[in-house]
Amino acid sequence: MSTEQALSAAVLRSDRFRLEREADWIRLEEIVSKIEKGKARRLSDDDVLALPTLYRTLLSSLSIARENSLDAGLIDYLEGLALRSYFLVYGTQTSFVRWLGSFFGGGWSRAVRAIQFDIWIALFVMIAGAAIGYILVAGDSDWFYALVPGNFSDVRVPGASEEALRSTLFGGQQEDGLGVFAAFLFSNNAQVAILAFALGFAFAIPSILLLIHNMALLGAMLWVFAQRGLTVDFVAWLSIHGTTELFAILLAGAAGVHVGRSIAFPGARSHLKAGSDAGKRAALVMAGVIIMLICAGLLEGFARQLIDNTAGRFGVGGAMLLMWLSYFIGFGRDRRRPGA
Image (spheres, rainbow, N blue to C red):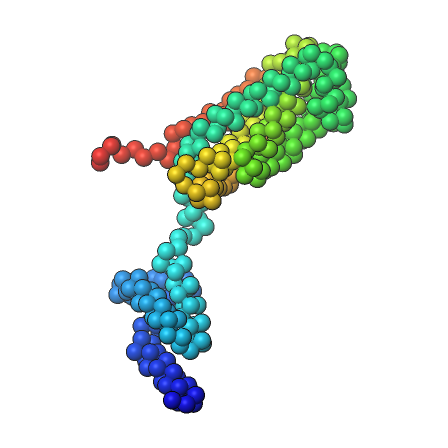
């Protein structure tokens, strides 16, 4: 057979292959196009039921076309249609509003409960970090200047008088002073939250070190106020936004630890699979962490300015903590009886 005859035979075989199956391809493409344009409701029940069958038939046609080296243009067309169909058959089709409802309706809380072991690890690390900062400064006040940035050490330094420290806690919230320190804490903690999660892939070690360093700074500042009997007042001042802000740091650190721990100890899964699964879960937690940080910023910007007494500050901070705990512990649980 000459080259010209072989080419003609190949074209004929490709044309016959197309004619035998083209009707199904056209129908599938019409269904896919309607769904992609948001017109899924216009599809008939028969079209909806036929979608997975037509998709599998398309894959079979694509396999045959590749195996027999049919027309390259035909193969490209089938591959493109197969890719579009795949996302409709196996992808999650949901609107942003529906996703948001699912997120707040229990998706976020379930993701947080799923990493509760890592939350306990992060909580222990944070408490240890605060204790380390407090103990270091108590043993040698020079540590304070190593832990706390110099531009925040005006009157809030070791040896400051009670009156000077109290003036930064009550009254004058609109002025520079502890309010500047609060703004620094929020900016710093937001960065720590993101980094603690992002660096978790390195077996969680950077995440843990970040949590320790961040809390050591807070522990050092706590010691300064504790030396003048202002521990309760300082904690109350911090609690307005701190119960939300530090909770966000806790969850971000736990998300990073979760990813790092899963990669380091994948169990029966591969390291890549374990890291992927943990990353998806941790990313859902981090989406909520961003929301918590925004809430903390609003509380720091408004509530802290308006409430100028210890009891009121504890009331706001305690209410926020109770709200977060109630949501994470009880919301989104399956209330059905076992076996129902």
